[in-house]
Image 1: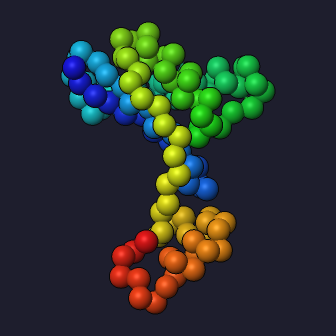
Image 2: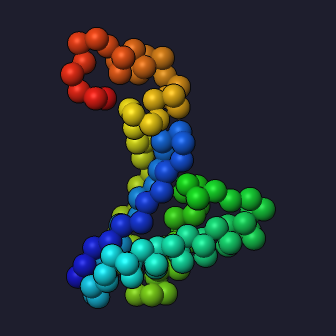
Length: 111
């Protein structure tokens, strides 16, 4: 079995990650094509059902799971998480306490 992952985020940093398993090995190019087709399917289906959609909505992951399931992928794990990018996403952080920690003078870690 081989493992694959399809994930997405938004400017606020929240994201989902869908971990998949398949018996077949896919090249990076082939899997990228599958992932992009899955996103198109998911956005179309979500829009049809709810009247709006977003690439980083957790609901999108459920439609992606449906699409790749038809191609023989088994969904092993779904997670919704918070991702912080201190270089590009610093302006999107809402927590003043978190900003204080990130901006400390004694902080040698980029985060």
